[in-house]
Length: 336
Image (cartoon, rainbow, N blue to C red; front, top):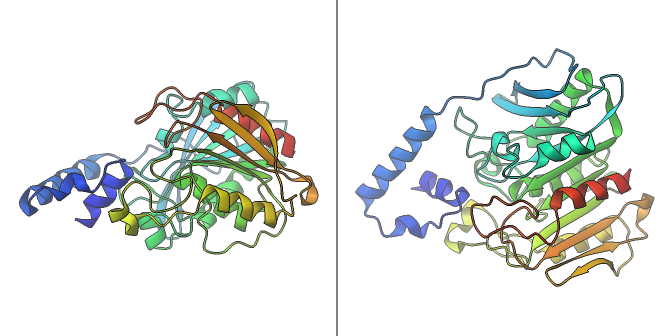
C-alpha cells in the first residue's frame, strides 16, 4: 500500500485512514485512486520555448529533461514591455501539488502579486509518475517521496527553464528569486545552496532546509516564514503529522536550525533584530551579513501548514498576521 500511503500523505491525510481497512478494501481504494489519477490528461502546452514572449499572458511549456517530460507555466504580468528587463520569481508548489495549484490565486495570490509588482511568475511542475503532473514532488535533499527516492535532477530542470526564459525574455539577472510552499520551500533552499550564483534571494514558506549538502558559492538573502503550530513541518523539527509515514517524508530540520545555519553561512551577526512584533506574529532579521545580504524569519502564532495572507485553505485558516506575498516581495526588493 506504499503508493496509496504516499497519495494520502500529500493529500494531508494520515496513513491511519487505511489502517482500519482490510486488505481487499484497501487494495480496491488504491486501485480506484490510481485509475482516477491515470485518467487525468496531461497539461496542454500552448507555447513553444523557441518563441519570444511579446505580450502579457499565461504560457504553458512542455520540455524533455533528464529522460522525463516536464511542464512549467509562466505568467507575464499586465503592462509587460518586452523591451525592458523583468525580474523573475520561481514559485514552487508543495509536495503532492502541481503548477496549476500554485498558480491558482485562490490558493496563493501570486498572479495578482505579479500583476501589481511587475515580475514574471514562473511555476515549474515537480516530478510526477502521472501524465497529468499531479501529485508531484521535489528532490529537495532528504525530502520528498519519488523525486527524492529516484534522485530526480530538479536543479537541472530549474536551470533549463531559466535558460529557455533568457532566450524568450529580457531577464534582469540581478532580480531572479525563488519561493516555495512546504516541499517547494525546501527545494528553494536547495536552489540557494546550489544556485546562489543565479538567485539573488529565496523565501521559503512552511518548508525548512533539508538539503544533504550545502556549499553556496556566494552569500544569498534568505527569508523563512513559518507557523508555530504547523502540524506537518514542525516548527521545532521532527517527522511531521504522521510519524508512521516518516519514510515517505523525513525527520524535518527545525526552523531554528535552518535560520541559524543560513545566518552562519552568510556571515551575519549572531543576534537578530526584531522588526515586526504583533500578538499573533513577529519578524526578525540578522544583519551585518556578507555582501549586504539579509537573513530574516517571520513567525505566525497560528495558521498551521498554510500560506499567510490567503483566505482559502484546506485545513486551519491561514494566519492574517502577515501577507507572505507582500513580505517576501518587500524582502526581495531590499535584496536588489
